[in-house]
Length: 270
Image (cartoon, rainbow, N blue to C red; front, side, top):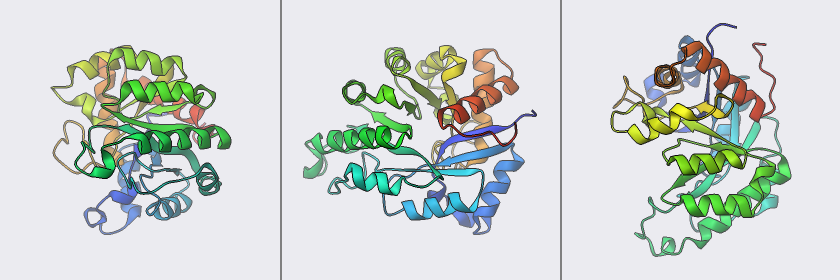
């Protein structure tokens, strides 16, 4: 199989399509031009989910997740039954992005001073993932201890998932691996000031490694400062190959294999 990449985490619904002649087709074509064949488009709120799902249904190589980001809509509650209904579609392959974020809310809103709503909603997502047999997409910032504790308390090892856009330390990565999670690196790993993240990225086992863009955010070097897009996941792979002393073909292959294994999908290129 020739060089082919997977973007395991992006937000297609957030892309400025005016940069692509106002058509999603051109996003997909640009990705394919850069040898990116498969894309997971991540939901952060329920209002945007229908658009995300519609895009996934339109393109065979695009899949979707469903969930509420920890920084979105603190006033919104969600039940396991509600999420389960939304996840009942073959194009929905993951639950999230979910998790905890004690940084972004920062107490600026009285609703956010008590993070119990975040923790309860996180538990709801984990329970939905187990019920639906669909892996979790985890976001954590300034909350690693609580994130790991809740994953363990809710038996998240039964379903696993991805620690996305990983920026934590080695101990956090080790614990996440112990409970069956994959570690995904975004364009942040290519930044010059990301030495600690790069050290973690050097030793993550091949069979737990994933790559992503998190586009339209966090464009990797050499595109840093520009709007990100799925096509740019190739630059993350190239950087990791050099960092890990591997070929880019190897990084593309193992991250692709991990993606299809985790989500129990058949790789159309095999």
